[in-house]
Every structure is written in C-alpha cells, then in structure tokens.
Length: 388
Image 1: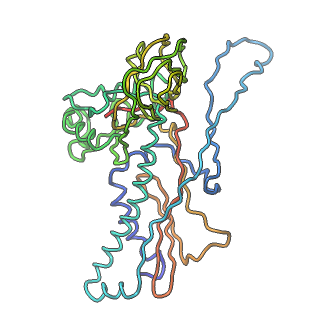
Image 2 (image 1 turned 90 degrees about the vertical axis):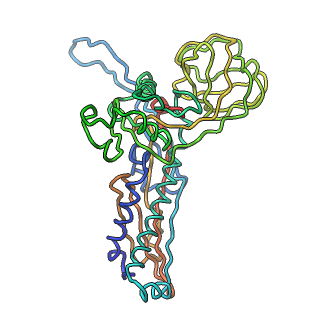
Image 3 (image 1 turned 180 degrees about the horizontal axis):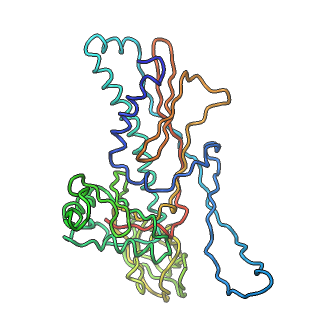
C-alpha cells in the first residue's frame, strides 16, 4: 500500500471506470446541485422554482409598464444520507499477499474500490428511482412490460405526451427503464439497430439506445417495483364536481382496503388518464385522497367510480430539471479529523464526486469512500411513469 492516496489514484480511477460503465441511469439524467456543500445533515436547502409567465399586451408609451413582478415558488430539499464504504487492511494481510503474487494485491484492492463505488452509486440510483411516487400521471398497463410489440415505440411517445401536455420543456427529456423493459426494447425494436435507419451503429454494436423521439433512453437497476395498497372493488366519488386541476378527490363510498402513495388509479369519466396517488385513503365512507400535480386533466362529474390499482414497475420519464440530486463530501470538523490524506475523484459518467480518506492506525490502515446526498422531485408535472 502506498504511503499516500496519490500512489493508488490509478487504481481508484480504474475501479471507478469499471463501475461508471454499468447500469447508471438516473444519476446522469437528473439535475445535480452543488449548492448544498455548506448544508449540514437534515438542514433545509431551498430550491427556487420559477412560476409560469403571465402575458400582457404591448402598449406603446413614454415608459414600459411597471409589471413583471412574480412570486417565486420553492421546494425544500435536505441532505439526509451520509454514507461511507470502508476498506480495512493490516500489515499481516498485506504481507501475506506480497509473499505470493504481488499483482493479486493490486487486483484485490481495485475490486474493493469497485464494490465501494458500486454500493454508493446503487443506493443513489434506488433513491432516485423511488421518487416515482411523485409523478404526475402514468401510461401503459400495470404488470405488462413495454416495447413487447415489434417495431412499435408508442410507449415512448405516450410517456412523452404526458410531459408535453403538462408543459415540460422538450430540450432535455429522459426515460429510465428497468432491465426487463430494456431487454424488450433491444429484442423487439429492430429499427433501433438498423444502421441505415437509426443513423448509428451504437445500438447494434454496443447496445446503446441513445435518443429516441426526443428522449434520452437509459437502463437502471434502480427502477422500483410498486406494490399497491389493498384497495379492491369500486370507489365512488363524492357528490361534487371536479374541475381541471383538482387534486383532492372526495369519496362517497369505498371498497375494501386502502390506497397508498404511488398507486395508479383510473377514474371513470376520464378513463384515458392514469393518476398517481399522492396522499392515500383509508377505507371509510366520506374519505378522500390526493393525486399529484397538475391534478385532473379533464373535468369530472360526481358519482363516478375509481378502479382499484394494480402492482407495476415504475419506469420513469422526466425533464432533467424536474428532479434534483444534491451532493457533497461527508462533513469534517474545522481543522480536519484524523485523516492522513484526502482525495476527491469525479466519475465522468454520473458526475458524482467521491471523497477518499486514508486513516493510518496501529498496524493497519482504513480507507473510506464517502458521499452525502439528498434528492427530491421539484416539479411533479414534469415526471411521468411508464408502467411495466
């Protein structure tokens, strides 16, 4: 083992290169914010959200109209996870490997760093994949994997349509899917692999989908499977009207069981839309549940019914700026801690910056690969679920 971390930087980057080429879909696709570098664990970080613009008629005159003031919205995010992957070596362990074949030690250390980077990356991918419960609406059939019909890419088109209808910017859209959907896409959609039609051999040679219909496609092991609540039977809406934009849905009577956040429901009278439950409902008459922004798309009359939800896989389509990931190094006290050496390395694929700390102890050394992060959907209207 080198005296300082500088000596093993090539090993670190080799290990990072291996992991960064694996299934990392969410992290490169969301907005990464470094403004949290001074925020402590569980402290609030306020992310500003610009409101919709208001048009005004242009009236010539001596001076422009005194207008343009806006109330800037915001959403709060916090650094709520601080983790490190430890690697411990003592002198006798190092000596035993040196006594045999020295490259074995180098390869083992590289593999240990691979596992450290992988563990942190996978945890963040899972955290981001869990944000599906804040999506606006969904498309597809629960329990049915997308892309199973040859040469048919309408799963992408309809997921994009939700974002278009909600006013999401079209310049930086992403679709992150699980490995099963990715396999269907690769196995059934041959148009993506015909070089003369796709314009690239990346799909055929490397299995890279790239951009399709204006959306960057990626595969991630962090895509979540949703287990719906125990609701069964028909839920009848309360005796009132539900204009466009309504988020709170009153129930006159309910079936058995409960609705949970993330459940996808269909409301008669607006059966073409699949709404994502925000706040759940207990099975009592007169209760209500909320759906995520922007609320109902079509005005709904009273006494309609809500179908019970089903389990699904939550592939996600979104605008980059709809989801924010804030990261920083784990905090040390002023003046530093016991670390003898600290290095920071950046993953060129995900953009994550890992902190590597070396601690010399009695007859042994400890290395930590650390990261602190927080995550949130800041614009639910610009997130949609492609059901699988």
